[in-house]
Image 1 (cartoon, rainbow, N blue to C red):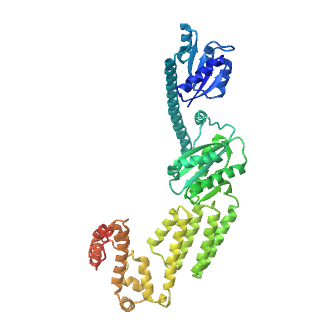
Image 2: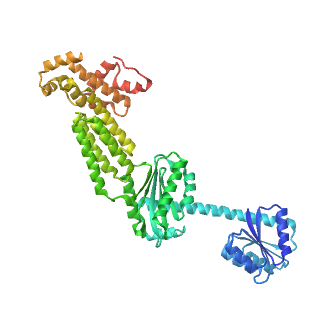
Image 3: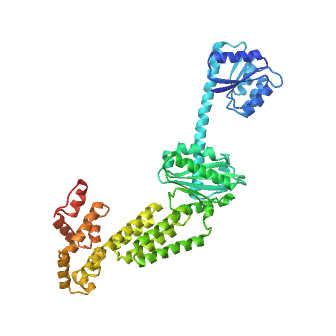
Length: 513
């Protein structure tokens, strides 16, 4: 629908124009004015697409009105009509950007043609404005993205932002990070953009960084901190209500002065990196540093308590203490992730040492998993797996734990990647090679060397099934530096080479002796 303003000091003329608009079912809403002065005031306070004006009127004639309107908003399409047909009027009308000049009485066909021409001009203006808004919007997004990604702000950027009615002079500013586990801002962007205007009663800009990460940039003259907290909470509740995403929101500190923008962005990014992602909730940077000494002391006390449980090999008590620690971490999301990981690494290393789990592959894998954990769920699972391994070993510890055979089997389990020999193993348990070989066969039914080979082949087979290592690396990881020798042993046991096994394992290939 287009909005047309009919201007004529004679009401019957205006009524006639309205009748014709209805007659031809033109998509227009109509406003009226009895002279140029009233019409100009209306144009300055309302959106007008088409100005249809008479020439001869009191206070301000139609040509002066057309000139004033054209200077105020050149997108208004102007139609001049009058009983005077002198050329100079037509010329002046053209100078005022009129699309046509109609004579009274108006010819119906000519009226319809002029109105359609005016609507076509309006449509062109709309298309141009749409394209211009799209270009300006893209430029604004790029400008804000550069500000956040580069963490820099200069006077040139300030001036460019003013082009988009973003004035930061004398304003409080605040950055908010909203991160999701999945690509929420790629799949739910429309829903998210519908949430923001409902609660954000201050100026803000949305800056998409990644499909799962968006920053909000707030700038305002005055607002209560509690009001911001309410807005953030409502946004979080709506996001979680409308999707099953795990959403983490970090609210930065408010500040004044654009020279601090880079510093505040750095702080927010450091906080994101030092917080377990996807914790599902809201934290405030102002919470950091508050009573941090007592938090550190509390973490150390829990660690020491867990270590005492380890000294007694009391795994149920250790599990209970770990649950207390993880529940504490869930409640206080602002605790440093890096510090937490190092505390848990100390605990895992002590656990492995207590139960003689010193296999390099196991230790390295567990350490890597802890350091790469992105959230508490992942790191909690790593600790659960380590505890399960210790419990399994603890359950097997009995009278045979002190026997030479049990010790040798544990050595093989921990050190199968090393160069193990019968002589070396015998020396370490204080027996002669021959006697160790004898008692090993008596207790297990297997020759010790064959047991070591079978153990290594089982590990090799498991690594090949995972498919994430080269065959030569699998051999070395199982204690074989000589690749052909490894290949031969593997084929003797399974009937195929390591390469054939790796290639066919996905096809359901069974083991063969």
